[in-house]
Every structure is written in structure tokens, then in C-alpha cells.
Length: 301
Image (cartoon, rainbow, N blue to C red; front, side):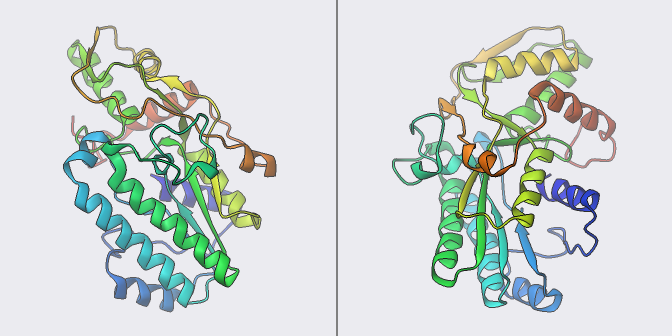
């Protein structure tokens, strides 16, 4: 999702010398394969949009691969980029790097000030290691290695598999299927946690901004600055999809972090801003979902 959005943004802006591989073409967990690729292609800039990602269920059931595979992917890329003397590296992470009960909104300086959310700490620890690696290279060698931490992302090419997807795409699929079958939609938790959502095309514009400017600090949050409850999110998606049935909340399932609102004022002060409203973004994502049901392998309806 992220890689394709950044690719689209680069092409739209006029960039033509783009180099990219799918996970099936280049296994970023393979250190030698990464070294060989970078030494052969000799890129000027590397954007690390690769990761093993998923929602609460996927993180809970796969703690080791969520930790180890993300460490392997990012460490191989960061170290190979450093050794190949690549001067600009953009590392993409997630708001889950911040402590579970950190003050809201989340500021960059809150990193490592308290304990993480247990349901996704494996992924978070890996991403924190990536942030610190980029910071260390920047500090010791003066290279333009920068980390962008987006809030919850969604948009075209999202993962709609109900076992591994995040909350927003999972809801889109659930409400769509329930509309067809005229069924009740069952959702996890109480609906009270608050979340911020960023359309992936807005993140792509932040990446472009980081490419075209030398940012003065190593870590920047990327978000809209507004959040909604999970219940409000569900009702918005239900309205966009056109589902007229009931919603049932399973309070026996975990809620996750009570609130995750990002303070993105540092990046906004430099000139970047998000453009998508949540409703506009959901409409865009739902239209993409319905038009790719037959040919998108993760959508099985």
C-alpha cells in the first residue's frame, strides 16, 4: 500500500528513474541479496516502505516474525545503504512506537519514556530499533537519514484480509459483506478507543517533502491532527458502504491503546499538510475495494 502510493506520487511529480522490487522479487530479509541489489543499482535515495504489518490479532498470534522479520528488513536496508555511501534514507514506521499511556497528542520526544502497548510491542520494538539506527548514522556520519512515523494508514492497495488487516480496511470488508447478506456486523472491543487515520496518499506527499528538503531533525510524526472513536469510525464506514443492519460490540475482545493522536506540528511547521478528510478517504478506499474484488488476491468474497 505505502510503496505503491509513494511510487504514484513520485511519477506524478515527474520522477522517472525509479527502482523498486516486490517482496517476491527481492527478499529484504536476505542480507546478501539486499547488499547485492544496492551495489548493483546504486540508488541516490532509499525509501524503506517495507514491513511485516497487521492488526491486533496478527500481532498477538505472530510475535516472533513481527519482531525478527522487521528487524531483518530494516537492518539490512539501513546498513547496506550506509556502507554504499547513500546520503539520503527515509525510514517509515508507525505511531505504535510510542508508549501506551503517553500524554496526548503524541510528541516525538515521548519515544522510550514508558512501556509499550502489549498487543503490538513486537512490531514497535523493531521499528524503534530502526529509528535509533537512522539517528545513530545521522549523528555519527552526518548523513540525511530521517524517520517518518505515520499514524494509522489506509487507502488503495490496503490489506482487507480479516485475519491480518488493520481496523479500517477490516471494517470496510465486514460492512460490505454484511450489506450483501443483510447481516449484523460484529466488531471487537467497546468502540471507545480513539484513533487517528491518515490516507496513504497524504503520507506519500510527506515522503516527497522529505526527499525534496533536508529536514533538520531525525524523527517526524505524520498525521492529520484529529481523531475519532472506533464507534464513530464504524458508523462513518457503515454510512459510506450503505449497510443498514445492526452493529454488535464484543467487549470481551481487547481495545488496544485507549488513544493514539499524533502531534505532527513539527512537520507541518516545515510546510507539509494532509489533504484528505476521513470521509473522503473512506469513500476513495471503498471505491478501490469494490473495483478490485476479483483481481486483488487478499480480497476473498
